[in-house]
Length: 287
Figure 1: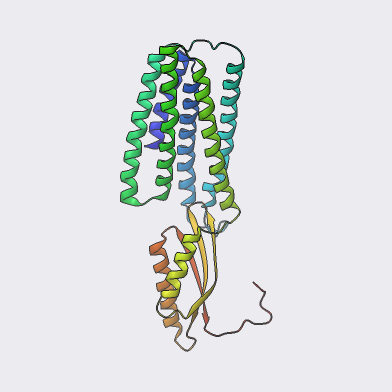
Figure 2: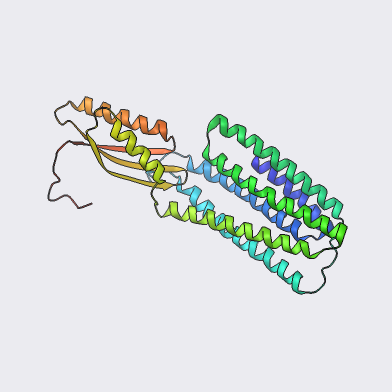
């Protein structure tokens, strides 16, 4: 749905740009083009990331999502730079040339707002049913797209009713600034994941709470997390009664793993069991 809406908007805004020559429409066109690219790239990355682990990728393929996001952020920055250059050049080159066919441009932008709003409502329904975090993030992105579309309409109205062609370039600069902000946010998130950044502190605290309260667990240590795409890898050492059977210890560890996965379905959990009170061996590496 996301890619389909983006494709319709790209085609309609290409036509609107050809008849209006509006930089604000151009900025909105670029944004829709990036939406299409990100939707298709995100879909491909998620499909690849969902592949099970194999001999060459023992921890799965989830980092493909981060690599795709990093590439997308670079393209967004380049597009924002091109829009900024065009807007600044038009502002310093003297009186702006007329935009023209403002009514057609306004019609296309109204279509853009209507389709984007419908998509956001549909995504909200999907999120409520599935709880999918990727769809939730995509919904936030499309909510942000509504602002440049409204700005483009204001620019076209200002040109049509008041002859203020400069508003078009100013709106384009504002849209470019939003693209830069979004690209930096996406790029930082992708880099954090590629650098094995720890999970959100709230998630870490939640796992600690679950482990500390779980029946049979006398204590825990060496809780480590790292993110890769939409997956959070969790390593945890728990301390158990060393006198109980291996079956009983396994049941506690397996139950704790299920409890963590129930609270955080995006996690990949590995639990190591230690007898309570065992001192570290002198040959063990320090942590």
